[in-house]
Length: 71
Image 1 (cartoon, rainbow, N blue to C red):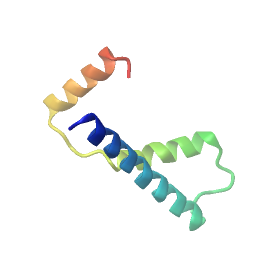
Image 2 (tube, rainbow, N blue to C red):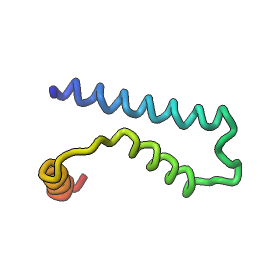
Image 3 (tube, rainbow, N blue to C red):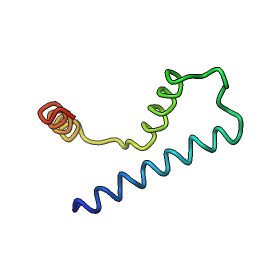
């Protein structure tokens, strides 16, 4: 992927994630008592829906890169 394609991919994922969460608000699925803690958990859970299964080797390499680059 080029840098431009990477940025477009991330932008698209963020837009889909935002759309999904906003739809939950629109349908009154999110309790009004939730604050930043619960909303972060919701965000994290929804974001995990965008993650696909990868090989153990590829996951290990990803984890290493995140660690080395302090991401």
